[in-house]
Image (tube, rainbow, N blue to C red; front, side):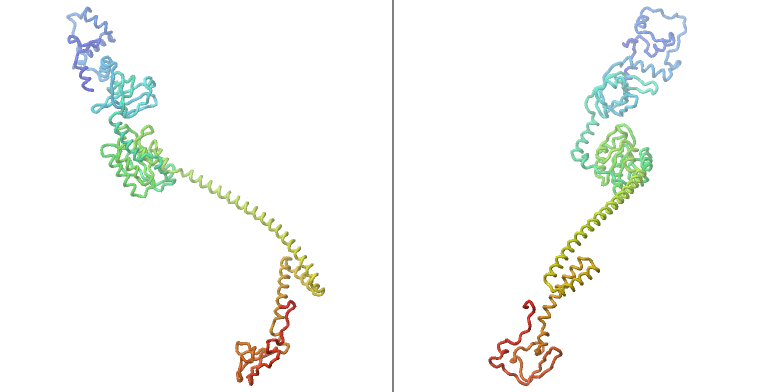
Length: 506
């Protein structure tokens, strides 16, 4: 850049732009013309004056040369004259370089810089020319521009006024970044399937940024405005040579604490300012973080590899603070809404249970009525059967008993008791008919030898003691003599007097 300007300053230039060793420097002539007439002469008039115009009188006092020690220029005049020289000498040329520090203000103008491995040239593209572009300028893009060189008078900045631009491929830095992005993407570090959901209510928030920067203030202000959460700050450099190592180390240290969420943040800046967040070690540290992460690097138009590796990306640090925590008022409102919903559900459940209870009560009453009618019918059938099968006197007694039972209990219970009574009476009658005591009442006796019942005289011997059971009481006897049964004796063949059998022959 300085070489080009030195080349312009190092030769004599005429108004037409051609070199001439016999004429004054252009700056000196322009100043003289301004002092003489207040305006610059056209190039044709200067050429005509150099050949035939009248020269000053010999006795006139020579004026000091503008730009000399006796007549120095002002700063603004020098910048203005230099800009005029550049406008005339380089009114249209092509320059190729890598786009850097791209800015798109609301005015619609484009401000950026073109750089190569040795120099940087600031450039501006006015809105009227920027609208004609068929593509969007991007950081790191290799651009071929046509325009004119000039100096911005207020800032004294040497820059290129771009009138037309076309892409010329990616620059070296952007190409390397793209290659790294593809390699990390191939490893799955940017896969959407690996993204984790942020905790609903984090107990502790970790922030990796400079503790003196605006980013931490924005995060704290935005987070505490919504929810008073504890914030742990890992102080690091956010740009510069050692920034990637510090950022990766800070992330690792926060992962050893009890934080529920890690925010990696810094304010906006140029692509070179954000380079630390494109470093491979930082991207891998974010991807390996055991807790969910939010990347809030730069502004919304800035995208770094850290943004791609994080679980969530925030356009600004303020947005990161808002994403990290819920709104306390919203939580209270949601809790109140849940309480109302639960109360409403409880009321509906109680009402439904009451309705179901009423239905079951009605159903049970109907079933009870039907069952009572069925039992009443069955009882009538039993009464008719009793009338057909029992003597009249017994039937009258049973009917009186049935009426007594009907007055004290339900008809179903009376019917069951009646059946059980009948069954019990029947069984008792049979047991009474088969009881050995009935046989003893007819004069028979039961002889036992301990636990053994004696049925044969040969089962005992003279002198032995035996017990004899009578209908009323027992006798302890001693056997005096054992007699064998005589032939023809009714007891000899086991046909003695047998007990009476029941009415059913049992």
